[in-house]
Image (cartoon, rainbow, N blue to C red; front, side, top):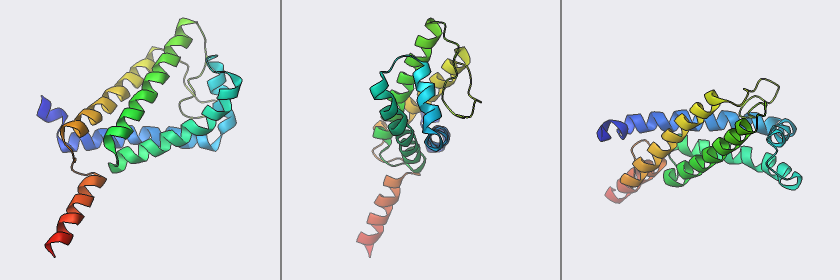
Length: 163
């Protein structure tokens, strides 16, 4: 089972899926930071002072970590950061559900097409969290994963030493 979960192609697929989700979500938030700030405010968890800062920084962090995952750059750090963001998202969603708030998650489309927080969103985020953990463990078990930026650098370095 371990060899299947950490097969380079499976890990690459997990990186592309998770990275794409974060890039798409982040870009949509960057395009409309006001709508994203309103979505964050709907959770009633963040002070007004932190609200705008979060709405401006979080989408760029999502895009950056998503790109890092896709291209295999700093996989342990980027997958750990994505996992931490997903845990925060799960806590926010769980809090909204526990308080009976009927709000859009603020995950993707900021033009009124977001999903209402609920168990479906929880399961989606848990599935994404599993992918982030899988990538983190694979990157920890192998210093350099195939199909990653680090493997390309190592290959380039080896070729330059042979010349």
